[in-house]
Length: 397
Image (cartoon, rainbow, N blue to C red; front, side, top):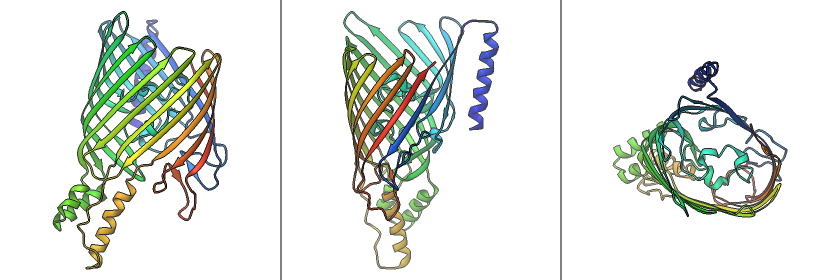
């Protein structure tokens, strides 16, 4: 955290120094204040409960860009979040990179970048840029990491009836993620992603895929793997390995003719690690623009395919093996991600060209056998069905 802030302060100081000699420095920013209420007692959902909370999604971001010449520029962004529950959501330096534009059709970035996996990855924190208060969480709140260190290149081609772009990126990243109730550090290297996008008048299609080597930093599981191997429970040991390949696929479509719009996005995430379930999520949104108001309806769902635990460890022979079996099965229970369906109806009011007020109502229905993003007491009889009310103010400057 101190390292990130120090780099940010250094970069900002450099930009301020340059501004004394040039008008090529630009500052911009965005902010959002989000309040929410969950109509269920003794239950928490994404930081919201049965009293109005403003902290979970509220944030403010600042960005500085310095244009060295017509080909080179430098960009830094700092994000201050009201909710710092995980390392990946900490306040601090969000990105810091150089941009090189050798031609009008080619752009290359190098540094700390947003992972451009989803349709709205580059601006998922800028609430003013989309109709919802928050992007559908079934897709955007998966355990994919938001940033990486590396290089990104885009080639764009325009024709009379369509625009086409290809993007590729390569790099590495480390940090902290959540897989169900399991919190873990992670490292990813040899991250390689490709994106293709085509725009035909009011219609856009986007596909993307990435692969990478992933390593989870969980001493408890590594020790368990070693014990299982030493006792010749090799299948069980292989099922809890913490190193392997990760794959993710995405497809998105947007149609917007200014009067009404449609959006959809689908994602599938799979790894070679048995303790990391396969996730398949999507959302569908339809809306109407009636300036200065926008009305929208969204259905979102996430399906989880859990891996089966190997039943190699015999029970009832001695207490040590019973304890080993208990610890082994607990790993699979805790690593099961959340699964939930939701319907959301919302309205956006563009009060000013740079200021929007939003309100949403969501019905939430979680999977009976999982936490489904809910936090409840151990003795709770909550059926994982409830409603969430959100209000928001989004501002860009």
